[in-house]
Amino acid sequence: MEPNKFSLVVPLGAKATINIKPTGNISLKNGYYTLELTDVSGLKWSKKINLD
Image (cartoon, rainbow, N blue to C red; front, side):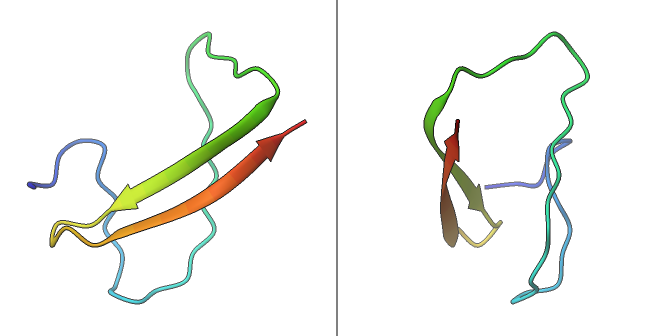
C-alpha cells in the first residue's frame, strides 16, 4: 500500500484525536459504523462508532 492524498502522517504508536469534517453534501444515517485505518506497512486499527 502506498501513501496517497488521503493519507495521514503520524509517528508509529501515536495516540491521536481525528476530526473528520466533510467538505461536500455528505450525511450519514443514524446507525453503527466502523472506522478503519491502515498504515503503509499493512497494520490496521478499527473503531466502532454509533451515530444516534
